[in-house]
Length: 80
Image 1 (cartoon, helix red, strand yellow):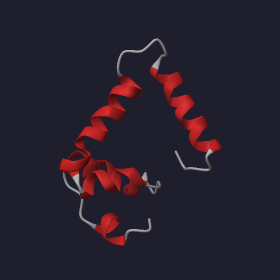
Image 2 (image 1 turned 135 degrees about the vertical axis):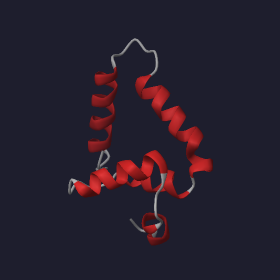
Image 3 (image 1 turned 180 degrees about the vertical axis):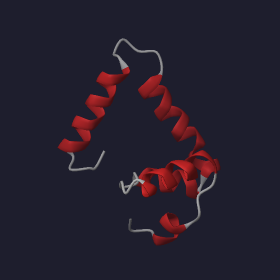
């Protein structure tokens, strides 16, 4: 990440647990999680919006939505 202060801030709560699990498993941590952990009050609405888009009621199953998001990220040369 380009913002060292964001990534290095100790993360608490559910996002902190997820970051610790990913690091413990030797997996890369999605960079957006660091932002959620850095400013949780400011990103709570973004997280809720994203969750609703990906998991809320839709004519598309959640798996298809995940596949579309992964495909789009890959086409944009972005790690998903």
